[in-house]
Length: 615
Image (cartoon, rainbow, N blue to C red; front, top):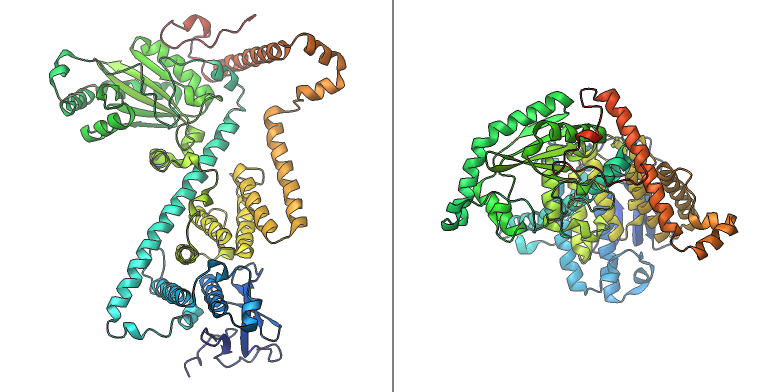
């Protein structure tokens, strides 16, 4: 009677891990194929099925036959498979029979746990999975609705039966499960954040790669900033910063906090002047975004001084700050020229090092230009952002930068490395949290614009890989590749898509599907060659040229410095051509600027580009 209201097309099965059986509990429907209907199976093995919905499980019976089941929801299939693999590992721990010999290579037998340990793990895992499912169905999680999942109510059949020890205090039991869920949820959130940070870093790298294709970039790359000594290897600004706040006589008798408070007051007094400067620049160039403030607080300034400048509060030069977002590199060049001509004597620093191809980015991949100006004896900061960089994270870009510094994410080559060292139980529990995150959007319902869920599924695919569930990882990566290929902002040759292909190749290699893997490797090679051609277009290596020109090889032996001279000559020509391109763009887009750029390079304000010989 309990199963009389099961929807047409749905069958209810019960998994009993005490005797390794799967049993049909609900009556068949009118359209059920009775000949293929599975009513009872003694399970000796289980693995994920290649079903694209990622809801399928293939069970092996004691007679050697295989049974294919499709669950109503992803999380049901995942939890059933985990429960079955724990069940088989317990049998193996007993050292018993046929079931031990036939278990899957991806089960818990590799964990080298005793039967008692596996029983405790099974109980904790199934209680967590059941608790999570109830939260989803009750609509108790952000983004979920009450009753979501329909026939997913069958999930109650995946629960630990022997919970007598909790009978006296059910609230205590639920509290213990809730505490464990909170710990695992925090771990999932942290791991997902790492995936997000590395994803955005790769986006910044891709944006910068494309920005270098701008015809004016070689010219900008040849320029030097003012008082720009770059940063250190930790991503912080160089502690030997050349510009500092004026060291007033009264500061010698004041504490650092008092000096910081005085600098805050000065920043407040000069803020209107900085606003007027930014308005003038924005009005002339048609800025994409303009922002001002807030004034840096005393506590924040002291923390920054301690972390970056060995406690020297005078090296904090962004008490008073503003930001401008320019469209592209030509707009940045125009802004620098306009700033020089408009308020050049006030400029104390132009920091451009992160925009140079041979210089590292800020932590997390971000690149920008910083202009420091001195107004009424106080140094302020104007952050000049480039729109293609800015649009990746928007106003959250600083949070991205701060987190990348805090967690040293630039040391990661792979987001999934964050999972290294986790035990199998924690990995399985993290997958439960991943399924919570995607409960409202099954994999086969995902669209290319569902960025939040795409990140969730990417993080979950990494868990599958680390948990030896390569089939489900493969299915997930294939779907993500399809979505990224469909995206109008990304496409098949984008760096992010290529990274997904490389993960997919790993899953195929792990399954021994070498021919499919090789085909994808060839495709990735073609994509990477296309990206290289975009930058180097028909460039031929010197050694290839030597093979075709023996005389050149002889000349190189006789003149070993020839290669370096040729590179220098090619660089000069590239910069010269880029400068001509800038002059053309300048004339077309910024006619209000002085047409003679060379005569306007005032010494000591914004230095001219590195001198190009034979110009």
